[in-house]
Image 1 (cartoon, rainbow, N blue to C red):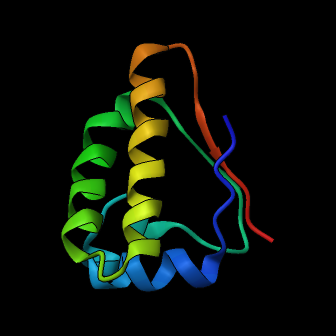
Image 2 (cartoon, rainbow, N blue to C red):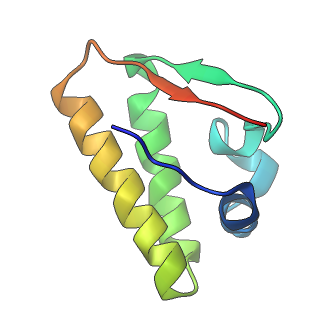
Length: 87
């Protein structure tokens, strides 16, 4: 499953939800790649909850819904890893 999100859309939402205080999302570097393991799922789910609370418009709420769908699929298939790719 691919979720293509522009940095310009994700970073302001992440900042509004807590920025650097978010252990996973607050550390994403838009110019680097990374991988999360299934053990990161509970923390990432908590952080997506914070994104949902901070979402201020329909586009941000749609992004949160897409992230939730991605997490649900990941929860159902624990052998998968979550990769992100920067510029």
